[in-house]
Length: 263
Figure 1 (cartoon, one colour):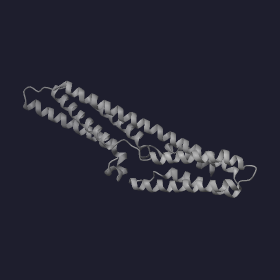
Figure 2: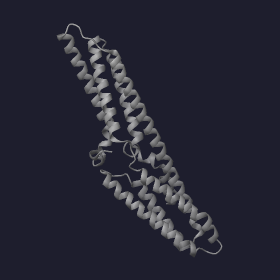
Figure 3: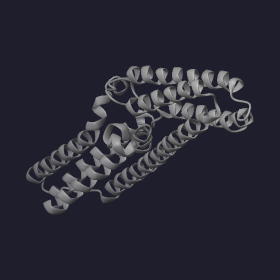
Figure 4: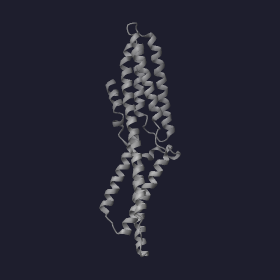
């Protein structure tokens, strides 16, 4: 991600609108320029092969961007479900510890869930996100220390279970949370989004120009194209930045169910 976006994450939610406005603007510019050419030039030729090549390249990059966004979204949702399930397992297996250690571990797990649900709230820069991720890392270290110190103090009847069941579950929880922390800022290079922006803008310019020169002005199809393109861009950005453009209740549904169950 580029420096500007990394320090203005609030602009992400407006990215589809910015792309849509650019496409509409360049479409109108192309149409106006085409009308101007037809009035001032006797014969205006549109090279369909060149326009087709640009449209084809735009479709390729758009499809590539959508594929990457869908893959990233699937990975994030898998990690979220795995994180919630891991916390649930450790919470249940903490019953192998003595009552005092159980209360301490369960309290830390509840703090982790609360922080995980709110980690993307009021985030304006990557520094804000890093601060919350650092806090999550400290909670993970605290949980690791608490459980490893508590297992030797576990009742004799459940100490073996604490070692063979709880300890591996803790290891998996730490691993999957670390994966989530590392993936928190994983997005395609900004140059891909800039390239897509340039291609769609140039494609819209050529479309408007071609419509005016060929006198094939079908504004219904144009509106349909703009609507579909705007929705496609919204879907792509929603998949790539789900915490900014999708409902937090949907993204954090597994964590919220745990919070409700533990109240």
